[in-house]
Image 1: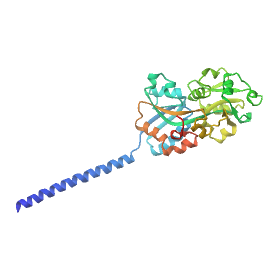
Image 2: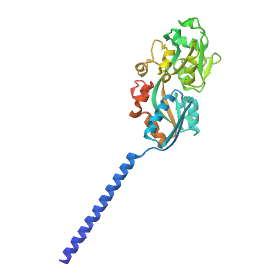
Image 3: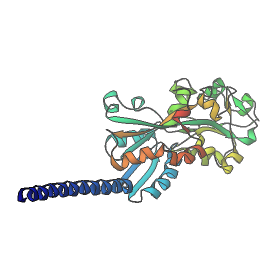
Image 4: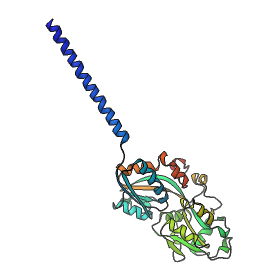
Length: 299
C-alpha cells in the first residue's frame, strides 16, 4: 500500500512539473509574438542624391514616421553623383541615383554598393506652353542643345531665341538625357550656351521665368497645376510621356530610381527602403508619376 501511494505521488509530481514547463513555454512564446508585433524601427537615416527622387522621399518620410516615430529621416538632393559618393564614403546611409553606380564610379568602388531599384521614373523635355510646340524629334533636340539651332522658328515655333537650361555634370537626370536622347554623345550638350541649374526644382523655377527656355526634368515635378499651366512636356519623336508608353518602352526618356547602400541595408535603413515600395506607400508612388517595377514591361 505504501509503495502504491509513493508511486502515485511521484507520478503526480512529474505531471505537475511537465505542465509547469509547458505553461512557461507558452507564456514566453506569447510575449515574443507581442514584442515582434509591436517592434518599431529606431535610429537615424540620412539620404542624399537624386533630386528627381526627392519628392518621393519627402512624401515617404511622413508616412514612414507615422508607423516608426522613433526614426529620424533626413533627405536632401545634391545630384546622383553626390549621392553615390557620399554613401560610398559613409557620409550618408542611402545614396539615391538615377543611374547605375557602375556608370559613375569605377568598378571596384561600385562593387562596394548594394543597389535597391525602387521605382521606374520618367523624364521629359519641357518648354513654355506659349511656344505652341507639341513635338520635338531627337534630331531637333540634339541640334538645340548643341547650339546648332538657336531660334524656335527653326523647329516650328515663333521667332524667339532659345535659352538652354542645363543640369550639372553629376546629375543623374542629365546622364539619362544624354544616354536616351543624345545617343550617349555628351558633346551634344553645349554648356557654354545658356545656364546651368543644380536640381530639378531649380530647373522648374528657371523655366517659369523665361518663355524661351528649354530643359528636361523628372515627371514628378510636372504633377502640379502651376507647372502644367506654364510648361509643356513635348512628345519625343511623336511619343508622349504617358505611363503606358514608359512601361512598354516606346517612350525612351526614363530610368530606374536607385537607392544605394554600402553593403546590405540593415535595421532602420532596411525598414525605410522596404517601406518605399510597400503597399502603404503606393499612393505616393502613383500620385507623383513614378512607376513600380512590377508594372514595367521592359527592364
